[in-house]
Image 1: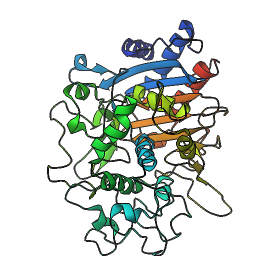
Image 2: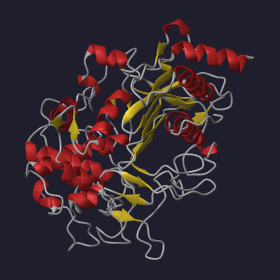
Image 3: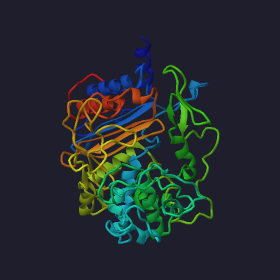
Image 4: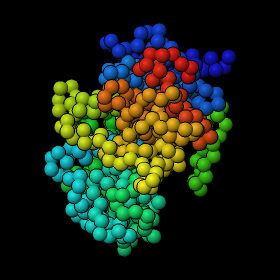
Length: 459
């Protein structure tokens, strides 16, 4: 009885957009999908704070819906705010795909080159000290084959220079844990966040612009995508639309993290600006091109599901959106072309993600994952139950957000799912047929079956 009441309450928050055209779900099917998503969100054993979900069928929106909350006030539930179409969320590593678009615009302009030594763009020599004769290139950085690792960290504040971290002998280089010893650059895949700090610094250096402002100019504004990489620079209206990310996990100053009861309170993890305004990451004396990690190119974009939809449509249209050319068609083809594929015999990479999900990463393009529909108990990159959906895109997982942005360029089918908070330890809720979390499997499968395949299935 309680679960049914909760589903009804969540549906009062839901906004299912009235997609038009031949691909749009009929009203009864749309309402059934609304209920299915609300049932997943209200699962008493594994509740979610909110879900934004979009399904494309043949390049057109078949379903768009929003369930749950972007802000939760445990003391005054009347102050809760619903998750809506214009709600902004920190989309975690989906940011990497968006940053790649900015990189490729600079490549088209001749400011960057995928295959030259990135040291030329940085203005200082970047080398793995264990393989000093092998240059690092943008192509390697974008495809996670640069030999950089996250073991030494991947974010530093504006008192640091990235050069002092990565250059042997630099005052913040430490033991050099950020450099792999097992293989030279270009020969081994290992997913990492740090390469995007190097990419961000190169972008700043060749343009003289701060990364967050550069991404606004190069990508977000031309595509009509809301949000940005700097909460401190969002408008008052955008801050009001910004979703706080939640977990039912309490974080302590000494670094301890404890998951609490699923029927207990939600704990804000990031982007809670109800009491204090966001603090600028860079002071007025910051020099562009000295610390590319500052604005979190690896995962700091705040945008909406609708904004990601515009990016997906542009990529589906090979660089064109609303009749305007954003990237050349051959540039998009090169971005989505396979750069690396796991070969167990050659041992040419680590197919597990940084969180240790086995078999999740099997092929990669430039700033995008290739999903090969490989499956096994708690392992593999399969997106939907029963298989049948291969695609390209990116996943996100940080601070309570889990996200999926994936589409098939040939069929023009696509799914976008953003979860704004998880109510139980996701590591204890592994996937049944993949390395994804179980709640992501459920959401992706119900969207695929009801909105794309047009077949009913239990959530």
